[in-house]
Length: 257
Image 1 (spheres, helix red, strand yellow):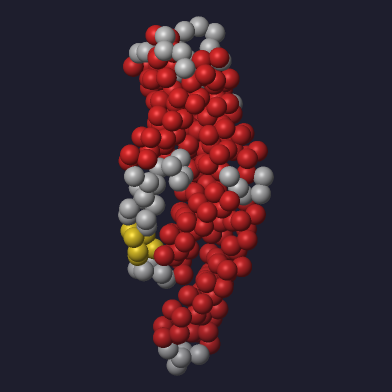
Image 2 (image 1 turned 45 degrees about the horizontal axis):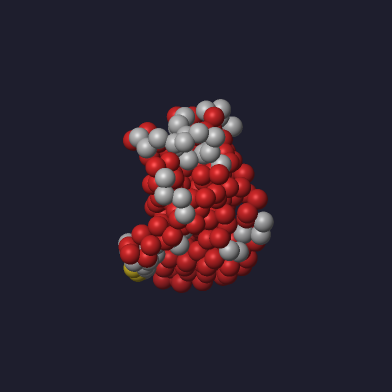
């Protein structure tokens, strides 16, 4: 590897881009992955990708706080494009748990070290498993290598590139609601049926049967809707590439898409 001043500058800035990816990318950002492993991956990927990054440069980069921040944000955007899907699945699980009545059954989530209801943990781990099944971790590394063509190492960051990342916070909630919609709809039908039953038969103690019915209906709807989440990952790479284009092009050129 070339150890000239320009090459070392590229290596440092590239490490910042890989580090930004590791901050939010699913699997890579998990607290179950030891810090030493993460640091080792950052160093290894930076060394392997350094020739590619250096070859995409038109001029030698300069190490400044601005360029360092640009690299962090670029890597953060690459990781965010994949994290939105897993985050949406986790949000859908939390929403379904509240609607079904399992919000009180909180357990420790091993991926982020916090407590959440069992359905939130199930959907989060299920989405992460599907991401690994479709080689999502390799797709993110490939996207990192391809990002040098759009945002060369050491490029200046345009503020317009931050807006698409902030805007996709709404996408996370909208996508999570789509995942949870079948369960929420079934639970709503169950609530309506129990309300009609309580009016038709006032002597019946509806509260004694409401909770098991809601849980049973909700879990049945969840089992039926799991393939929907799985089907979403069919062709995931194309949607991910479109998302990254919407992030990186404004970040490099300042033209919002």
